[in-house]
Image 1 (cartoon, helix red, strand yellow):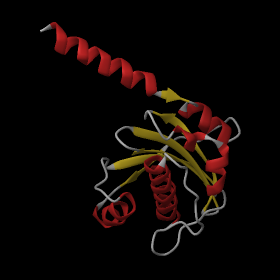
Image 2: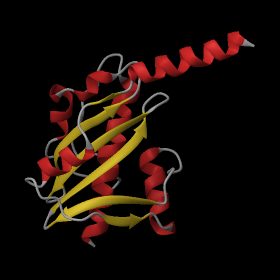
Image 3: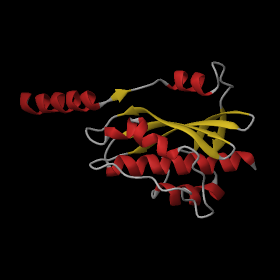
Image 4: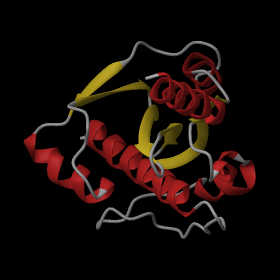
Length: 168
C-alpha cells in the first residue's frame, strides 16, 4: 500500500519540478499597456467561431470563452495550449492586426523550454494571419522542442484570429 503512495508523491514532485512561471499575467498586462491595463472583456466561442478555432488548434477547444484586454488598436490575449502533455501559458500582444510581442509566461513541460527565449519568440514579431488561418511568415523550429513550437504557433494564430473577431 505504501509503494503506490510513494510513486504518486514522486510523480507529483517531478511534475512540479518542471513547472516554471516566468512572468505573471498582471505584470505582462502592465508591461503591454504601460502600467494601466483596461478591464478585461470576454469573447464567447459560439458555434460560428468554433469550427475555425478547431482548425487552428487541430482539436476541440477546451473553453467556451476567453478573456482579452483591449485599448484602441492594441489587444492582449493570454492563452494556453498543450505542448506534449502540459499546458504552456503564453501572452500575445497584437497591434494593427500584427503580433507586437509574444512571451511564454509559464512552461510546465520537461522538454521544449527553449521556446521561452527571445531568439525564438522574436520570430513572431509583425506576423499576421492569412485568409486560410496560417501565419504570413515562417517560424523556424527548435530541435527537441517540436511540440512546444507547434503550441506557440497555434497560440499565435488563435490570438490573431480572435483579434480579427473583435475588430468586426
